[in-house]
Length: 197
Image 1: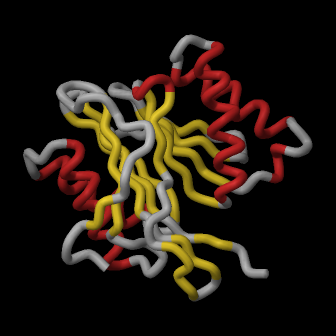
Image 2 (image 1 turned 90 degrees about the horizontal axis):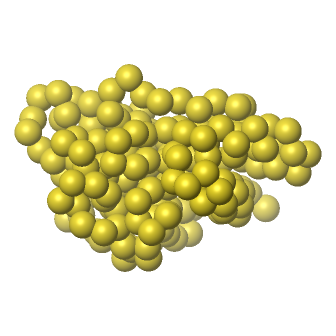
């Protein structure tokens, strides 16, 4: 059986608001098997956002580990990330998990990998997945050259990635935290952006 792959997750912070957007497409080989998957979640009562690229069951396992550490370290985003990555690298079962996590709150964005990486970007933008480079480039340009808010930038960046990457759809789920963003919905409904493929 072929593995499922392909997604784009992008995080943008502007003015104390962080938006995390994920597309909804799941593919198996060259076949789209689902268009409305939700690949972003709110954690810690909506104070932390998490998105993933990679094998779904692996990502859920890692997000659960991260959430447990987040609770143990009372919402300390970086400390929970360090402990998650340490366990991911050293545990015999976890080290084979294939996923990338994008974790964010209203101040910071972190990318976590099974190679032991915890990356805090130079600019308040990060993206993972097959369309990640396109989404990150688009979000960076929009952040530098427009006055759009974090949510609008994340949506636009995902839509641009969907125009280029065949494994990314324009069916976006967007969560926000911080500023006037309101509470992140722990069980978001996917929304379809018109005009995106």
